[in-house]
Length: 468
Image (cartoon, rainbow, N blue to C red; front, side, top):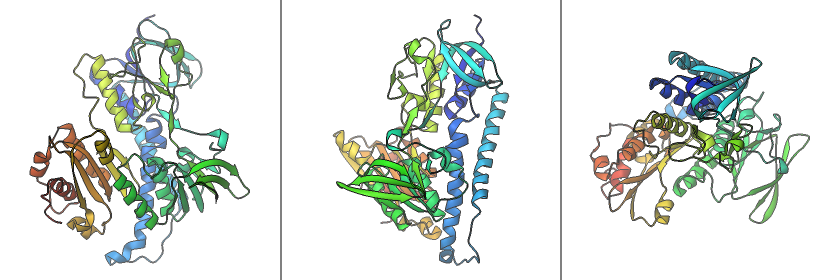
């Protein structure tokens, strides 16, 4: 059959739509297939609308502390329906923006669900169209960007019903804020929802099976986060394993085991945040000989799946499950297809948790560096002695830096505090440029800013800290 497109992208999340744009920029005739909404989970049900909710929670929580700033307010309250409505409007605006970008770059959007079959060179896509009927498309290159979804465990009751048991999707659009909830899992998704609902006054307990919360973060950050969250009224059961969830007349009952003892937690609602699984079903991958491990497509350094002309990027290709990682991989993949020297797929990838306080990191933790047998120098600087933080009343948290003692290379940075998700990019850029302590120490940081803590933590690693 005739070739319809140079590149066909399946999935329009931040991995898919950015990949399509880069392909179009490189002069490739491009199409994208989407079965639900442009922007995928991130723009419609994940990254963006959750941040809108979290901002509402942050502002509402700040009202408790107006007296600290010499301010007062007569009446404090919220309209939950309007909080959710604002979040949905933000998502809709971004969805519309992706549609504009597709038109701008002359990328054809095909609304439907794709299934792959052997084709001429690359697989052909048989698309069940939303509008009805079927369309078969042959492209020179096919890129899977189908993303992932929340992991559920039906055998112990961890399966959403839309009323008492939620995943992130149900947690975004409830009719009312629950008076009490149990969050199962303390990764970024679990902690962000716990932070939001606690800010609105819900009684929140977080259950984590690993020895500490936000377990991918540096141990010092995990400890500081737990202390800060407990100060705000969050409760934790760590480490604890969920044995069974059952529904009751008033909500849910969750049987857990902690410290060898059985315990029963009750709440109106449970949020299941125990990881995600790749969207690999019903794509025809088995017939194409594509290897799938633990629900994720196995790829080479350029996103190649081993099947001719078929690539996979983003969440469906494995962790870290981050929108910016997906976009980066997609750009690399398309540039490789185009025969260019692609952007480095091994660039440092920052991670962010938009709780209160925020958490951000890039590179390896202190424990990981020691496991690798590296000789390191570690610097720390607390926000409580930073001028801008004091003036802003944002004293919680610190910046931690990890350098290779032999080369001076920055190999890890970890932060907890106000707006650290905006600051981590400074360290990410430094690592991408292979900066050493000398460059960071010589960098002029503006005063007064909270970013000065980044400079001081870099100085501290080498015994040169100035303000502590």
